[in-house]
Image (tube, rainbow, N blue to C red):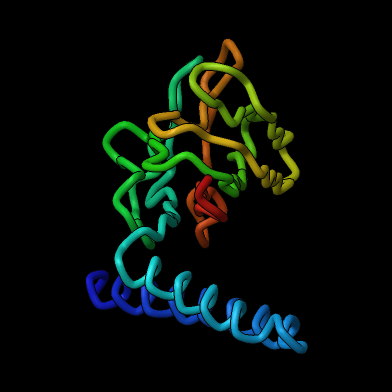
Length: 181
C-alpha cells in the first residue's frame, strides 16, 4: 500500500515542480527573454528528471517518548526523494550545497509540555514548544544554506522526556532542496 503511495507522492512532487517552472516561464516570457527562459526551464526539468531533486516528509507512526537531548526518529516515510533522510537515525544529510526549506510540526501528549529544536550540525536553529493540557500545535519552517554533508535533525532539548502524539500525523519533519549552489 505505501509503495504505491510513495510513487504517487513522487509523481505529485515532480508535477508540482513542473507547474512552478511553467508559471515562472509564463511570467518571464517577454521579448528576448523567451528563448533564455525556455532553455532554463528545460535545464531545470532535466535536473529533476536526472534525480537531482531532494525532498522528504516523515511522520511519527505511534505515540513516541523521546528522552532528554535525544533525536526524534520520524519513522514513517511519506516521501524521500533522493534518499537523504534516514529514519533509523532521524537525521537528514544534505547531498548538495544549496538552499533548503526545513519544516517541523509538533503536538505533545496532554500530560506534558514539549520543547524541540531544529538542529544543524549540533547547533540550535529554531525552537518549537507545545504546552501541556491544551493540545496546542507548533510549527517552524526555515530556509537554510547547507553545505554538502551538513546534517539536520529534530531533538528534545529539555532535561525531561518528551511525549509526542501521533494522531493524524501532527508530528512531521520535512525538507526540500530549493536550489543548488
